[in-house]
Each structure stands twice: as structure tokens, then as C-alpha cells.
Amino acid sequence: MSRYQLESRAVQCPYCWEEIELDLDLSAGSQTYTEDCHVCCQPILVRLTVDEDGESYEVEVEAENA
Picture 1 (cartoon, rainbow, N blue to C red):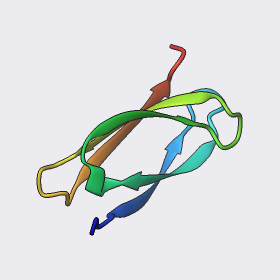
Picture 2 (picture 1 turned 60 degrees about the horizontal axis):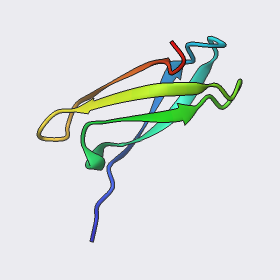
Picture 3 (picture 1 turned 120 degrees about the vertical axis):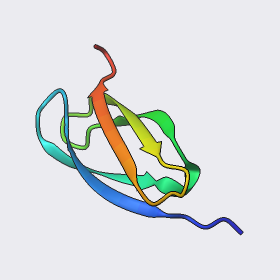
Picture 4 (picture 1 turned 135 degrees about the vertical axis):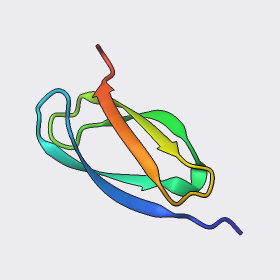
């Protein structure tokens, strides 16, 4: 049985500069993926870095088309 560790994080879209909420699955570990902005629909590159114990994390976003 898999156990999800979900966190919500507010980030600023690198295209429209609006603040959006990302739902992050920390149980999946560090990952890089693309998610569309909920406001302007542009593709955002999300880099999630989760430490080994899964207790702390960092999230960075940038324009995928950069």
C-alpha cells in the first residue's frame, strides 16, 4: 500500500506572475516535471527536491520555453 505525503505550495508563475498553488507528492521523492499554469495555461518546469527523510523539500519553477 503506497502512502502519499502531499503538500500544497504557492509559487509564482514565470509567465503571468500570478501566484498559483501546486500540489506536491513528497512520497515520490525528488522529481522534475511540467505542469501548466492554472491561470495562463503556459507550461511550467517544476523541480522538486526532497531530502532523504522526506521531511523537508525545495521547489523551483521556471518557464519551460526559456
